[in-house]
Amino acid sequence: MKKITASAIGMLFATPIWATCQLSGYQANYTFYNKNNKAIGTHSEFLKLKSSNQYEIYGNSHMKVLWIKENMSTTVKGQYNNNQFTPKTYHFHESHKNTTIQFTVSSGRYDPLSYILNLRAALLTNKKSFSYPVQYTATNTSKAKTVNLNALKTVKLNTALGTLEAVNISQTNQNGVTTRYTLAKKYGYLPVEIRGTKAGKMVFAERISGYTPTNSAYCAVKD
Image (cartoon, rainbow, N blue to C red; front, side):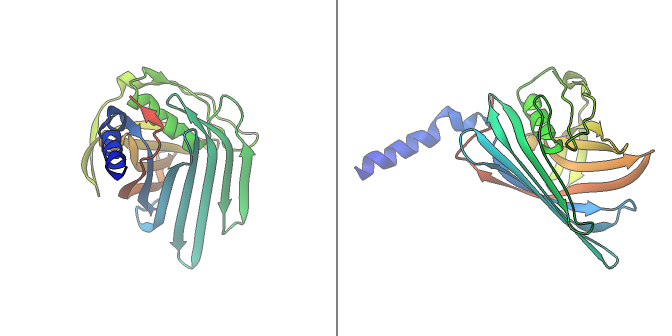
């Protein structure tokens, strides 16, 4: 019986389904920079596939500017199926201001984090274009911006993970802050740099400092 079990496990890991998984659970760590490009904290993001169709995203930021400490946390819960992430709830808390943003994500919209996951899924499955509105609060949603994925130019970026080929995609929120995501091909179009600007001036930046796959039991995006 033990020999049969070991053989079965070996066959399972040798099957093509493991080789075709494009996006599973992970932890990504970043260094956070202020508008003067000074490191002021860290950010970690976790994608957890809780079951064969349930996902959760956790984001935690810890910063310090002079004597002020700031902690921010984000939680998104939703479902995934057919290379698509459908968010259900969004929760954000900022410690210094003691403010919370919480809402049920409306049908046909993405929260800011699920927007990036679905954008990555579209790139990984060779979609021609991508267009979805982003919901930031219970009442505020940006207009859908269509991105021609076939027209994206490849750039090279030096990172803590090495020199990586990537593409840049930007999204502007309700406060007029344009966030440019640099997505690395080698890591399933994981954001390796996130840079916010307003009126042409830098507001913040996050740069990758580490990446660890954390879940191989389930697969969210298959080719």
